[in-house]
Length: 107
Image 1 (cartoon, one colour):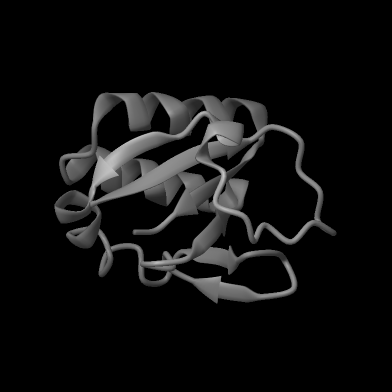
Image 2 (cartoon, one colour):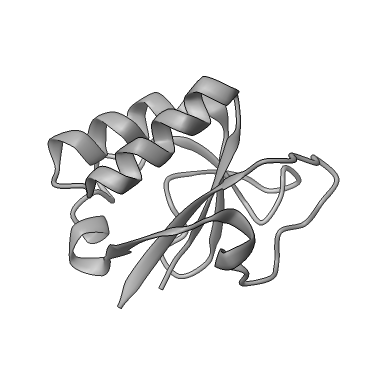
């Protein structure tokens, strides 16, 4: 089982991200056992579930999470310090550099 993280290149706050479409966002797969270990550390990270109409915190374990640019520093820190794959760290850094939102598809 894996989680997938990608970059939303063209952010639209009016879009509801309800469709499982990792190929659209250049997603990186991360094993569930790794992401499961991050849940507590990310439990207060500002996020949205499916769209900005639904503000939340943390990752939707089995749903779709939108991670705003201001939350990416925490995601990067947790990934680096808790065994995240290098390709995910590179993806996060790319999103930070370009002010992108990221998307997470849970298991």
